[in-house]
Image (tube, helix red, strand yellow):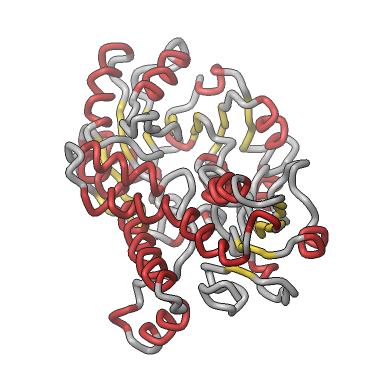
Length: 396
């Protein structure tokens, strides 16, 4: 990698995707400028603070911020950089169809500062074919830019570790773009895997859809067991014990977050809504909160106060985006006297201390499997689809 390509700007870089990459690149000696429209997030980053749970990120941030790493809200932050990494993805609309206009809007806002010769890297998930489409659109506006798609495939909260330990898929619209993208990620990744842009786009979606479908299988098994008063956790433990062919079967739980559902629906849209396996997984996973409420009805919910332990979309994380714990809360509020919520990592004045929830609730549901709940021995009945407390998937 040439010395000029070590000057990097990351658009939207204060978030879960951009910031871990920014600090990792800075740790490899690159000069990194984060450009983000969130002024509060920019101020926090410049103060050496990571605004979310990401192991190892704050140590690297404090080591490099003010030196070869900085954050700004100004579009001028891309001036003088030779690599521009964009972490703005392709969301889905209310009809579950992908939107590609977000990328165009970013470039329009930066148009006066981008230039020919820069490498523009799409980092977040995009709809299959979007990179080639975007390349044609970009060439009409800023001729001479190199365009690459290099998807992130890390687990949120462990990104700093996994950026350096997992293979990195790279693709480019041209051989030159591909070579530059490869050289960039060779600085940080354990291994580089080259694909065409469409192959890389599909590969990223396949990764997330596979996880979502596997969770759907587990939750379907859980539902089958619950309807027959059988503990799925016991069956799962038995069939997976020292049996390698069942290693990929996860436990049950609320399968949510900002990516898995969205990316599964993007595949469905790409496949003319013929992705029946993914769509079935969506019905199972999105239906689990309703099943949990049905399991709780044996308590006579109209007079009960129910506490939800954990509102994040996954354990030991503070991110509530698309968390099904909120759907669970809404469904319970239609049937219970009161619903109390607690989470040790999520911030919000609507959340109550754990001790208060344990004291006032007549029953509990584990909404997020935070490890700090593992040693709880509640006095009241608990519904724990994750089997975090060792009580199984039945109300106990």
